[in-house]
Picture 1 (cartoon, rainbow, N blue to C red):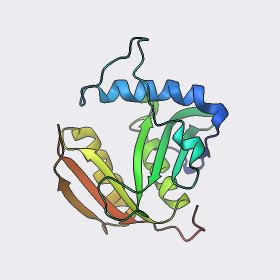
Picture 2: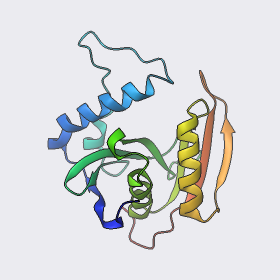
Picture 3: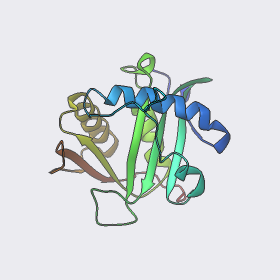
Picture 4: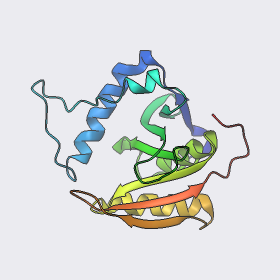
Length: 175
């Protein structure tokens, strides 16, 4: 396990777009084992929603996950979730930790920091076929909430989704 102060979340800014675009390519490549994603003619997957994070700072939040001074991944959250009726629920839209930082606590600490930074009701969705993701999120959410969370399955195409719902434990101000 890592020292808790080694992992930080840094709110991303538009000048970080090239870095985030590169990280998103790695993330989508990892997801291509589960989802049918196609390369564009330029050899990149692309992520069309990234510009929305710069134009909607109230409804979208993006952070770099860092381990010390090194970039370790990113976390993206939106207000409103495809798995919830409430427009104020927070959704973990995308979450990625580079392979070199997996299985050592970086993802767990970054998730805790995300939920403590942006207070509210949270939704985490993960494809049922992503067994590694289901296991990770189930363990991390159980730990974060001391077991007080909802868990359900939601139909979807081409995969069903595991949906976790819970409240932030943070007492800080809302973002």
